[in-house]
Structure formats: C-alpha cells, structure tokens
Length: 201
Image (cartoon, helix red, strand yellow):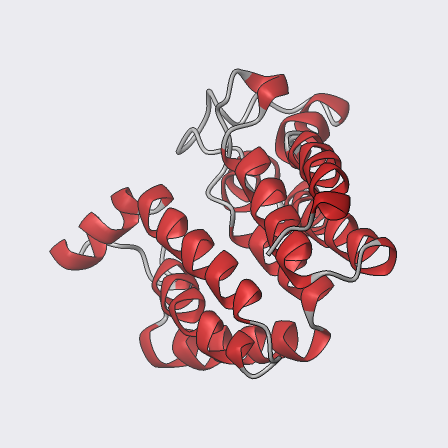
C-alpha cells in the first residue's frame, strides 16, 4: 500500500494535516470577535453549532467555513502533489483527528462533521455534493441535524467505493466510527427522544 518512496511523504503530509486540523476555527473566531470561549459556554463544544448559540450567525458561518477548509485544503493539496489514494485517505483522517484532538488547544476539539465534509470534497467533489444532498434529505425527514450527519457518514463509505479506491472507503469507515463516538451524547438524546429538532427552541 505504501512503497518506500511514498512512506516519508505520507507521514509528512499527514503530520501537516493534523497540525492544520488542530487550528480551532471556533476558538480563534470567538477570540477575534470578543466572544466567550465556546469550550466554556453553552454545550462546551468548539464547533459551529455552539458558536451560533454564543455569538450568532456570522461567527458560526465563519467557524463552519474554517472547519471545512482545514479538511479540504490538506486533502486537495495532497491529491495534487501525491496522487496516491491511501496517502490522501490518511491525510483526510489526520486532519479530522486534528479537529477532534487539537494539539494547540489541550486536545479539546469539536465533533468533526464540517472537517470530515471538507476533506470529502478534497477527495471527490461529486461525493461531497452527494453527502450534502443525503444530509438534507434526512434532515427533511427527521429534522435532526446530528442524526442526519451520523446517517450520512454511515453511507459515505458506500459512495466512496464508486470512486474505485477502497482506501477512501476505509478512511471514511474510521472517520464515521469516530463521528459516532464524538456524538455519543447526541445519540443518547436521540434514543431518549430528547434531541432538539431543527427549528425548535
């Protein structure tokens, strides 16, 4: 899977992706805009949803964009420089892990949906669009953003198999499993029937 000539570039690219993923858009944007630290306010999650509660639509939108870009950029650059699916899949996973466990912020990260989606667009724009369409369809049915994200990334590895590389599907099987772990609180609320629905207060 990794030849001797590709092993070192794959390690370097993955390390760079992890460091980029470790840059928390939520924390930095809240600091720049004079908002409370999202880790200490609301749900305590440094992600776009909690920033929306803390500061409103603009900082939440910027957080969402920042989280997506730190998945997209490392993967897109790697795909151009090292067109090797296992390396690209490893870089996607590293960026995602950086978001979940950021070295710059005491390893207290967000849940990873936006970063996982951004990395997916770096792998395949068509699959990224298909994931968004899937998310929207599930949201329309159940009106729960967290459930839609979990079910979407359960299906994404199947979509990725159509790209012809099992390396991408394997990477997103791991990412999907970790998304389920990062959403364990949401899953408990979904099962209990207490997870907030879109549009509810």
